[in-house]
Image (cartoon, rainbow, N blue to C red; front, side):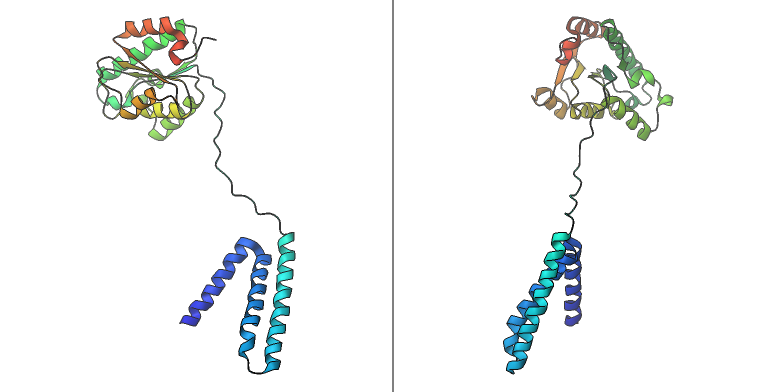
Length: 250
């Protein structure tokens, strides 16, 4: 059994070397092994002629294998480096502002959903009064639950829209549905390096922990503005304009 294991180990080792370094590398290793065995085992033979034969034969055959291996290694093409992951560049922005608000998480709470739609409508109207025409928001595109896509399609659509947005604005109403996924869009926008603004109702005690951290961090451009009602949002946008996002108007 031990012989079988040794043989299997040699074959496995040779296969590994062959894959890593090619035939040249394998011959190089075999050559050095033969030369080493000839020098090490030759003196074990009692007859001088046998010793000389083993020593000379091992050195000649091993040396020949080493030379051939070196020649093959020199002629072998350089190994192809493994591909490194690259960050796909964002497409050219086509949406001036992406507006996000909780929607699907409201479930059967139509009053909460309608209040969110009203807030988004007001923000969109205020931005357009500043001359910002291309405002994208899934809230107004699909305000009713029956019009939602499947989750996979919905993610793909919103991911593409986020990648092509210049700015991101998140509206957090007084009551957040437990099952909302809108914070995922905030994380994606931050990761994409998009200037972000969070409008959070003043009755909310605090942001989620990591989102609060993003507001405090100097590594990303995330700004928080509390609001009281729709009128206060419209006043904020009218007074600050694009400076809301830490940007001067073009």
